[in-house]
Length: 402
Length: 86
Image 1 (cartoon, rainbow over the protein chains, first blue to last red):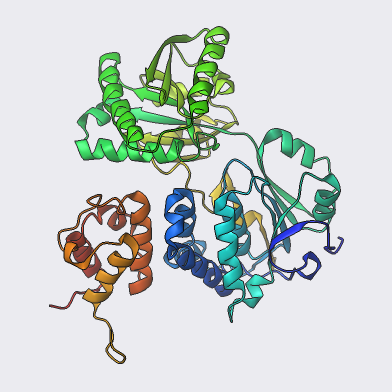
Image 2: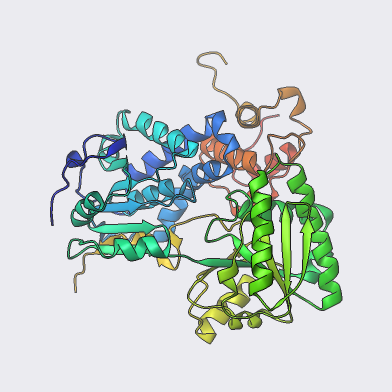
């Protein structure tokens, strides 16, 4: 195990890399919870963050009441302690993931070196400025000494040096990045938590959509908007496919109602870049050549493209679109998912379908994919359990007495 | 607020709305979710976080969803033993 050395990186938060406090703490330490709760309050008090729903979502997640609830659910697993230093490589597509990753690393009891994406999202600056402010406050020195947020261009020498000095790596960023990062040497005991490319879908019950009050359909559309459009459908947990349960006639009516509400909502938002419309159109041309199972396409201005599939066929996820591009299919029961679900499937968002029904299918039928079933609107809510990992457990160790 | 004169629950409740949703006091009593652009799903998160911090409580998820107006919120807080003075 090598000590962390000072490397040619830009340090956005914290002092020198070599001075990071590597001594772990117990999960959900009073200090870590207090630091994150202060971060939540500080962010929410800043009106500038309101334009970033993802940032408000992060601040909402790390509010004191929620962290206390998580700590209670964790119960007193007193014999656990953080692993030491966690090295995070945050993704470029989801701006606030670095903050969730850092927050979870702290809650698990670790020191954290977080490499953020070079895209310099405004959310990153807002969060870093707030962490910096809190770090200077009396009483937060211990946690502050466990945080470094850094930036450097892709550089294997730096990544390798950090990999050899850490006890856990949290790697976001898809298959290619992960395959590459795994070729670099790490310390022998290092644990890797990897977030590979995943795909997600939405299941709706047609009769539930038809039976819902007008306000409920508007709320459903708003939830769907947050799941998809806030991050341009780029997040792993944003649905690329909408599956409708019901008979054909019912589904047609439910689709009209639902997509009408989504279109109405999109029209009330600032216009999306022209390139997003072009991307969808080009993608449609591509799949109409490559995919036999397409039966029809419905377009809602340039905002939403919907491609109806004759049936669900395995591998359909490889044709995933962005910026509001969806596949749709009608099924009699959610069990039909078995034809497409493999280990690549992550989140199912649902409306009018009992999450328990889907979870039972996964567990009882031995499916290799789907590790999260949540209501529509919750797709992007990252938590301490993500991608099938209980991150607090994975990022800490047990001290056994037997 | 004067020194030595702590805010009442009613004042704290109103202040949470005013600071997070930027709504004038006069408009509060009839205010409902989505009446103003600031009380959307994002503003709702800020409001809930502020109320939890102000009163030192953890609102249950069902109560967070049901928290649909200034008046309804007062009834919800009563369940957490936060009562508004007459």
